[in-house]
Length: 316
Image (tube, rainbow, N blue to C red; front, side, top):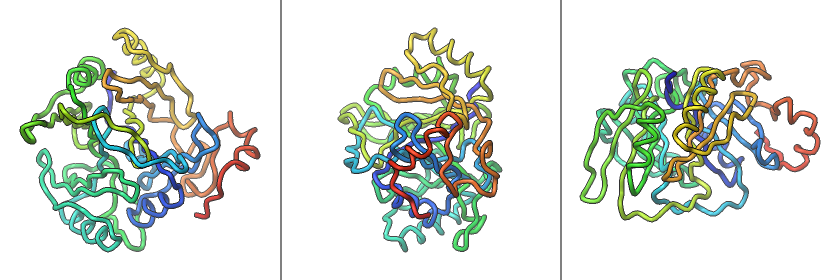
């Protein structure tokens, strides 16, 4: 019973159309599922991923219209990373983002890999990471973005906390992550790198400790939760028992139709989800038609007319 790696990361957007334009037209990611937030069906939940909608490739967004901006800080999932094939691809992205009026940092080294930092139009902090050792992920090729430069999938997820103890305990004792490295950033902060499964960029969580940082106030551009990959429902039920044995309140197993999920928070308030790899996003749509129409799980299908009436049409 092991966590395989990152399954998906879910963030908040105030404008689904603006979000769609950036992640498909600028970043070249595939919209693999256009659906609704199952806990609030009046708003969209958009999933972007690789060509095959692979577990570990999806960056997802809940639409919260008119959401205020995120006030960044501690007790948060503070950044997400997207993997590309090479340092040369990072140079392509540095120029492409500049052409679309997105400021970036310099290409730099992060835990032995080359990385490029930017914030998306709503303030979500993103790292593009050169993952030259990985064969995982199949980019969605567009007219402007080749397979060599395309997004492979998710890389390390960054957490920021004031006190590392509660989060380290969950990662190591509960979830079975291994501490891989630790770096001093400055006099007030440090970076600890954890990995799981077979290792590699798609298996990592990076924890930044900053003692004096105020707590985040999440809004648009903030990250709601990080989901971790488990093989199937049987494993998820075992994880449910283990998490309960450590005294953490949790959601119980939730049927999301495309996957089964379990949610809990660590003592720093970080929301973790454990998600099964299957059945996947092609369970209700042909693989080549993913994301083209509003998809609803069977338990919401009888409400389609009422749900669509509440949603602002998206002209994709």
